Image (cartoon, rainbow, N blue to C red; front, side, top):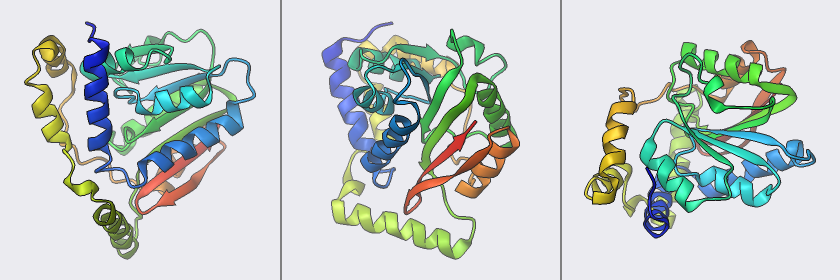
Length: 252
């Protein structure tokens, strides 16, 4: 199911604005992820990069602009967001609809060689720890030796006092920039539900998406690092943080 390019432009731009409510220094986080990828896989002739939980391609498009020689596979379970992304960002190589972590999901990516890198942003905070460990093991098996995983996410420190301070940093920034007054996630979806062109995609979305309470797994950057090392990554740790917004990197 395709979406008109002009319609996709409008709704992806609207998506970008509402996402600013939730990610502290979102654009800088994207830039850091692209910096890490350029450093590690930029010299490759045709790096193969998977974007997990790509949504409409916010991260994929930015990385494609930085690494135009890369083959980027955008992966998500949401048919509407994938349709919007494929119409808005034709520079992304492929769009794959699958549920990250379900049995056989790596095979559904249609890879013709090992991945050079995996990237994600605000997607890997949903699976519970046991499921996330399985996902990390799947990815360790799909990456080449020396390959990279880079994950930007909302990661709250384990210490309660530090967590409160990190959250306060995000609130203060939102107050300064006025981002808290923008359309939120629920409002975006409510408005999308009124668009006739989206009806079939939204029906498919209702069938596809697994139930979720939306609260996430609550893991810290250190806990992600521990799971990554258990999964077979040789090094893992945070390379950037602003409030609760973090970038975690792991090397295969």
